[in-house]
Image (tube, rainbow over all chains, first blue to last red; front, side, top):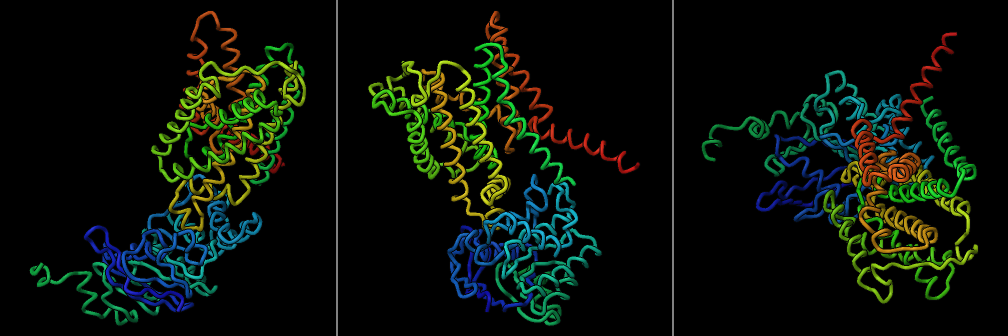
Length: 242
Length: 330
């Protein structure tokens, strides 16, 4: 197991954004993470990569307990993430953005540059390497998010809605990019709302709702599950009870 | 292509930075030579300030405190123990590094306005401490350095040796800045300044990065303080530690181009002579030079908020591209 999450809970005051979630990710796979808005998907990412400290539970990555490690330490161990709301370093060029990640595992300028160029190639952004990041369009910024994360040479990559807001053609390209990242040996967890895309990418999907894991299984199981449909569309009786 | 131009632009700036040393030699008298010394010195100081605050986008408004530590350490060692200011300069640097470590440990974790306010507090506390500990520093009266020319005393009769010293100081600060821009530290620092959380997620250790740059900046600023005190030969708390001194670092850096290696130098090359000449020639109406200087700054900040240097770079790039095009057509 590359990543093992054992009954992780994250509380904000009285509210449990993530409650008692356990999951395992095997080396080389793509795990899909879905759920309605506010289900706790992004919070779970924040817990895994150390942006947020978890309230309870344990996260084990590659045999190391990372539950209380800081995000830069976790990045060095090999977990990278992209943000749903893109966070480019606006005044740096595309290449320089990726190089910040490139310096994660090396101190040598040339090496960092090579690593960064390779990740830009992987996401088809190498032709924009000298453009200042704030001048990129949304699709390119989403790719840059991935390139930055890839430049840290991660074992596990967390992608948070990298396809949201993209055109269907861009989505297709992104699916190919994710496949090629996976083929290069990186394990992925992806949060996505575009079901078509997630179904074509991952063999296993986990569904979160109100911070709890309500379902785990193959794309077919998930899409046919009454529970999942209820989570997304709600049920009248339940609404009345509430 | 674009990269080549940028490399070229940097070498143009290097040529200016190195070549400028001719200026004090051809200036007619001590008055103008004095302006040259101050221009180089302020360029060095503003570049040192820029190392942390400019690249990391976090304004340290108490930075003159480090200049004061440099000035007072070397002067006190010289006056009381006869220790050469050259050694005093290193001692001041060491003391500044220690102070930066201590202050940085407390304040660097603060964000935005809170960091800025804490640096003001730090600068003012140190100034007040210097004023009140009269038995050591002679307080607000200041310290006079006796005129004993000699290399070991870092005191010379003419202005030229000072100009060379200040110029070397400026070049050292520039060299470090350029190196920084091409290093892991520099990339981490700029990324942190833009977005701390995103930078940390890419493996940037923010505490270590900021601390390293802060100490580097403090030590270099302190060296400038020693040179300043040996040049003026009189120091008092307000002139070397006051808020207005800190603000001068910031103004030069912002006017020239915040977070660029050569920006603060360009800022000083333009503003320091202008401010000194205005003061000299408009002495008739008191305060007029300040008014005009303020207007110049407002105009720069209003129309070129990036600073002068980035605009010059953009302009030269456009001109070069225009010059390139017809050649391709031929």
